[in-house]
Length: 401
Ligand SMILES: Cc1cc2nc3c(=O)[nH]c(=O)nc-3n(C[C@H](O)[C@H](O)[C@H](O)COP(=O)(O)OP(=O)(O)OC[C@H]3O[C@@H](n4cnc5c(N)ncnc54)[C@H](O)[C@@H]3O)c2cc1C
Image (cartoon, rainbow, N blue to C red; front, side, top):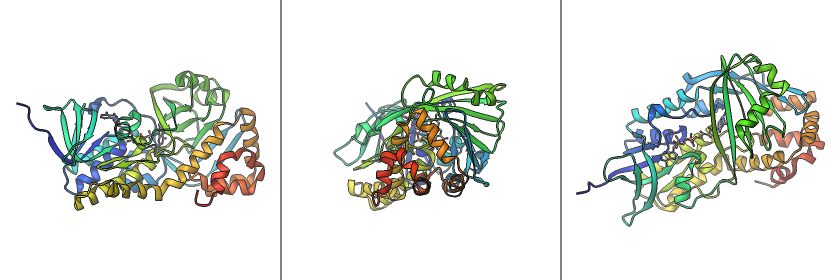
């Protein structure tokens, strides 16, 4: 005889930073929460870097995972011009990604969430009794779990968003990073490298992480690892990594596109699964974690009221839209304009930005979580930038856009 499915208040698919935080917050209120991840706990593949603003440390308790403080950036044009932007105080921090994720999943477990690693969600469906059944490979008989709310925090895998017809990414960028020791760079600055031959549609970077550094890039198309090798041959990069040793390689996908639909009756999707990523930088930790707190608050309210309707779940969609929706739309437009520029145009753009009063403005108002804030000021200050603003300008000008 088949045993009956275990029932949870909330099942979270994905124990990345975003899913773990939802699980921790809901479990803290005493609800029955399961968080499942297809990887075994101590066999999770290396994930890409974590350059985030200190706002992340206000959202979750992870100060002890900070490896380095960053105060600015050096932007290197395709032709080798270097522009230094020095914020003169901590503008971002580099986290130990593995320790950060461990910290968040430990918190979820300590709060009472059941963490099921090595368990892959294969499908989910709403039942006639108003619950959601999740078919899971890697759990005991009968091979499925049941819940009142399903949270899809399953990254770029596309599981939950696909099963419940949520928004799909407009495009999927490919990114990779080579962690290296012995990199010769100023620990206080990230370096950004522009060049269409190695980073078409995006850019490359060196992020110093206190003793090690992450050398990486993102591309719209092509072989990401081959492109990274190409970037590493560039003189501006070579001078930093000439004597460095590789430590670890990781690669991943970055979903780009504005999410129109992130919830339905009984269902919410969050983090990379909901494309809550800044298209300008590919960063998704701050946006995903901020959204995860709104997702958890909605789940708690729904459980209190025993209301799992689409209307109740829309509280989540409206909540994150209000906080970061406009910015994500603007970032997408900036990315669209930027990704079309040729090397010659990028060179001209950097030349226009390389003026003391413009750099001053970036230093004062630059914010990697809200890059459009400085974008608008720059265009007003240097109207010649208009020709490169394209679609971004239209969105910035649109009232409330
Ligand atoms: C090269 C690169 C560099 C990056 N650098 C930065 C950076 O510096 N700063 C920043 O903010 N962001 C960065 N990001 C983005 C950041 O990594 C993501 O935005 C972040 O990991 C999103 O977290 P998440 O919890 O939504 O998803 P994930 O971290 O992807 O977690 C999803 C989890 O779901 C699990 N899963 C998927 N499908 C299933 C299933 N069917 N069943 C069970 N489990 C499943 C996966 O195993 C995974 O553990 C970078 C990304 C890349 C690719």
